[in-house]
Image (cartoon, rainbow, N blue to C red):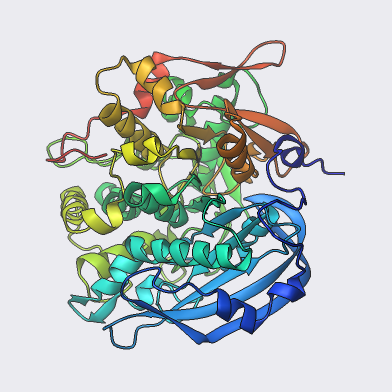
Length: 591
């Protein structure tokens, strides 16, 4: 039997109580009707917005079984409400909202907004259940992109060379602000909250959804009591262009490694760095120590083997790649080459320009080389470049403004990547970069942040989250010592690296690694009960130790196991130094 320690340790919501804020205990049938919702629609909540009351739909859903990396497995009942609104004066403008409401017996005065991933502004039904599970109403938006299944990229271009700026602003920050303003007002009206009744407001999201959460805290501090975000895709121009860096390394070095060779390098890195944290469990909990002590050249000459594949993504997963790949591949066997290690080593070292100056950082040792995956050409029996279209789409759509796929990297150099990053930083600073470091209004309003990032994330560098946390510390506490500033920041904003975890998910290559499935519950306890997550609760989600509980250290403290099997959170200056980079090729501060 799987023990869900997150349920046991998070005392916040996942309980059914009748609260004083409701005047009577109404069933879903009592609140889930078109007329009730129409009467509860807010008026004049946002200047220039008109809600279409005729668009309201309601549907009672019972005994719905839901599962996710971001909330405990649950069976939920709720009222599914949808309706549309428009912005006055904008032609053909229509934004859809979907809001789930609990029965009053389960409602605990909470609102939860949920975000998306990639260019999607929502995650469909995979994220929105979290509000119901934690005793709140929960909502998502389609951003005005045509439907809940449409991403922003489908609506971003008016014509080649011309961006749809309303779509850009909605995707960047506006749509989520409008969702929370309208959703919270509707929730208050449905449940009869008075002006003195507190409605706690939370946000949860990962990847692009994490960036969306930060877009709200940085702009609309008073709207939120707390956010729980994972691996945010902020610093947009750097992050998206970064996906092409591995391809340019391969082109520059003129070597396109077989996927199995890269897989061998990753597995050998994991095996060598696993014990550095004091415990041998197949998980690299200290990629910082790995960076300090592991010589990747020691992998040269190691044998690798992968069986032939008749289709699909091949022996090395390409889950973060939106396009390409999928053909048959031959049996792969051989020994790790010096060229293969040079590719891997250069990728891990991060982007530098032609003068040797650092532009950006890369993934931690032990992370998959997802961006570097090659494709097999059965006509020439060779491995070839496979353009990573997570980065390719950014260049085609937001740099060239002429499409959503990039067909060629001919002529692209490290300096080209630098130019794309810096020019994009300038062009999208107010919309997509989302790294404003002065969070004083949010902190003064009493807001709290739980921010986590998989230590083996192969899509968004883990150091990206550390850099933002450090930027906030430096801007908000400039006159304090490092430790005093870090401790002051941790009073309301904590960042955790997740040992062995991949991008917004546990990592099958390190199955004994924990995952913070109940981070929103921990956030609620922090906001509403003052229970500070000194360490963040996490549970092993797979493998032989499924259900086991672990705790995550709040940065800058790092995990270290003693010989008796206990874990301590330690301060290690040499370790901290590996997470911080001087981006001296960029002519402006990079927060």
